[in-house]
Length: 134
Image 1 (spheres, rainbow, N blue to C red):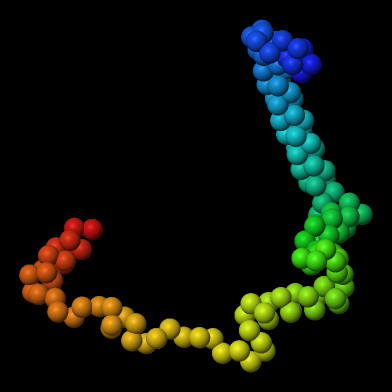
Image 2 (spheres, rainbow, N blue to C red; image 1 turned 90 degrees about the vertical axis):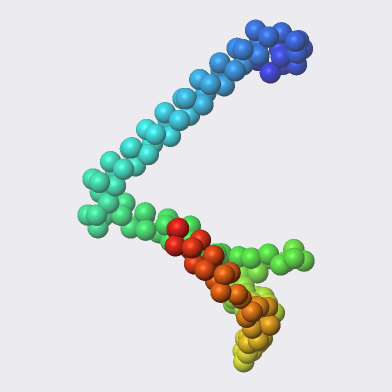
């Protein structure tokens, strides 16, 4: 189909056929995915909570998906095991600071220096009216 469209790009009927084929493919893929999900749910309901081999295999699969097996440095070097752990520690220490790093606190006068304390009574009443509407 793709080759025919490439050979005659202005043929509208070929594009319509391709569109129809694509629509049917998407529907079939969606149906297959839905079927497989339902099948997996049935399998889980039958064997999942019965402390079976299936249950333990599912736990292994879920745990393996969550595990980080290796990391790659910006240099392209792949790290595993303790080297990977040390790389994580080094990376986050460079961002957050060392072991005894003190967090920097904002200047305590930042708000008082930015706020204008000279608000007239009329401005205060207008502000309260606006706030009371909500």
